[in-house]
Length: 186
Image 1 (spheres, rainbow, N blue to C red):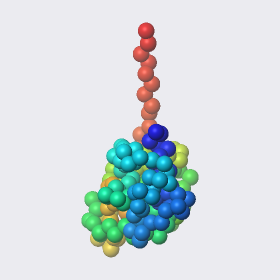
Image 2: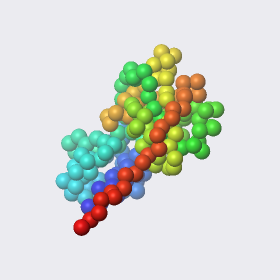
Image 3: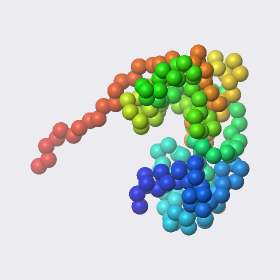
Image 4: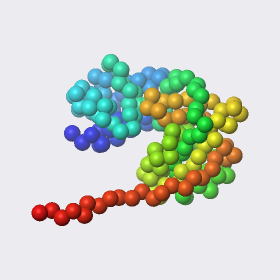
């Protein structure tokens, strides 16, 4: 079983297109596990392995139900409670989006909320998926004191409706370096 491939398929089905697997999500984004297993031709053990080993903890599995933790482009109410954020949060993006973000702020796009990371490294990793990463610092303490409502998803991602440009600043991040094994095999 290709865990990455299955994880991507689960994300697609549970976040964007449940109908592609013949599923219907309830109002909170939950799907029936047995129906999902049948549709994706997985065993319960395989599904549990994918959920447990997903590096971003994208899924919640509770008994006979499963859902994505955040990132939906379809209407769901994840019912996360408002939470007080740390003083600063981070958002990873790529250089080509920076001018519009600095002019208009962070908006959710096709998702329900803007996703923020608790640390710059996680944001850098998120931004690097689409090119050279840029990391933005969000003055979460000031935004919260000004009325911004934050929630924290089950996997630790911070969610907010939008972030105005005045709460953002760019931080410098070191380039991602790939270490090559230079030892000689013998």
